[in-house]
Image (cartoon, rainbow, N blue to C red):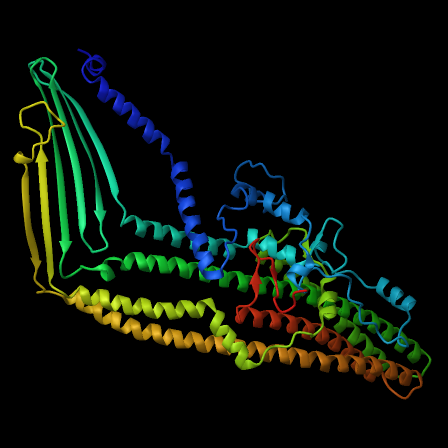
Amino acid sequence: MPAHRILRHHWGPWAVALIVMADLVAACSPRYYRQQADRDVYAIVRAKQRGVTGVEQSFDITPPGDFDDELRVRRFSPRPTTAADGELGARQRAILSSTRPDRAAVGQMVDMASPMPATQPAQAYATTTQQEEAAASITPISGPAELFVEPGRWPANVQRVDLVTALMLASVSNRQFQLGKETVYRSALSLTGAQYQFESQFFGTVDASLDQTAKDTRSGTVTSTLGFNRKFLTGGTAALNISNTLFEVFTDPTGKSAASAINLTLNQPILRGAGYRVTVEPLLQADRNATYAVRTFERLKRDLAVSVARQFYQVVQNGDAVVNERNNYVNLILARQRTSKLAEAGRLPGLQVDQARQDEYRARNRWVLAIQQYNQSVDDFRRLIGLPVDRAIVPDPASLSRLLQGGFAYEPPAVDDAVRTAMSNRLDVKTAADQVDDAVRRVYVTADALKMGLNLAASANVPTTPGVNTPAAFRTDFGQYSIGMLIDLPLDRLTERNAYRSALIDVNLSRRALTDQIDAVTQQVRQDIRNATLARNSYEIQQSSLRLAVRRVDSTNMLLQAGRADTRDLLEAQSALVEAQNSVTAALVDYHIARLALLRDMDVLQVEPAGLTYHDPTTDR
């Protein structure tokens, strides 16, 4: 009889069961398991976020776009994609085209209102018309124009972004940010594995076979098992196995048999490995690791927010330096022209004309270097937020004016108060303190491993009536039962001894790590206050220096006209002016970055659930 007829006539119910099982296997696709993992992990992350920050925040490790599209945006396209050259992902485009958040909600380190008025040169030194004529005579930089672009002279297609937009882009594209989220995910995924060890682990198998002998005897066997394993918090284990065997000789109507059995096994440690503290340690450590990962990610958000702000304002600071160096270059062209005329009139020696021309060359070189540094910082900014370095996006030069408008209203707290706040809030300090407890628990676990092993074991096997086709009629009187114990004498404990001694050392290491972390945070906060105070004082000094430099240029120019000063005096005054202009901007940016760093290191810099959009809690309106 063909095999398919055998299945149809004799094993119809089992064939149906096999088909149903095959359907179940097909339904449990990789996509199903991926979605199941996401559901479990995201639930754990939300719970950990509530415990760490008090609120649930948006969390998703899905990449921002198709990888092939990202390669094509970067002009590396190994195969056809759906993105046009230079096109960003959908989430990135949505951020760039969306309405900006309410400025009152994100504080004063955000969109900048109007351009900062450029520092004007001494009015008596050059008229506007003279400056325009001198600027028109500047020879462009010899090289690729797209690599040496001055601020304010970008092509029309370049998009200027504020700090909030830059932070939102970083929340989508920054590689460290994405890695941080994936690290949290992996930690929570490990926790699901640890939890699974204390759940009932079900299993089921079906083994079906068809056999034929040389005498044309055909038979079939189906063996199925169903059961579960379970680990208890006491350290004990239980295993239940229900088996069923169906056998039929198709060429002999009497050749049928069906038998089943229930097997239960129990095992409970009495000494080594017994008790809640030892048994649950892997689960507890996995749970704490998930908490640590969420804390680390929250710190990463704050660190990245400050890093993006620092790079953002570094770009606008470098852009301001280009403007200052260009103005200085223009003014030195005028100085050289004026000195040449005075020399032609016999009022100055020709040597001073050469001095003026030499400083003009230096000014051009400084201007070229400033442009190069500005463009390099733009590339660094794009890479930091995760965009292609040739993407037409730049920080808005107008951002500097808002910093000027914000001024220096923020007063850092007293040192002791700032340190106390940091100790209360810092998530990394809390993690270091918790890791001391972890090390102490490991000492207990490794000490337990030194004990003698003593396990109680019991088993029961209850079959159906032998030789009778009654697969559901179990007979306890035919059962087999046993109980006993297993003793493992502690004759060789070198590995366990070494683990125990290492655990004792780890306690001391974790305690030193905690004190070092406390000292590091204290040092950070103290240095942040120093930096903010230094930048504030530097700004006041540089402002005074700038006013003096302007007056010095004015007076030196008039004395030169009257023949009471030489060209060198004017060149030195002009050099002092541009240095003062750059120093004022640097001090302004340094102050606001130091303020953000202080808020970050006190762990009061709040990061919004939407990503890296943040607000400074000290300046909420």
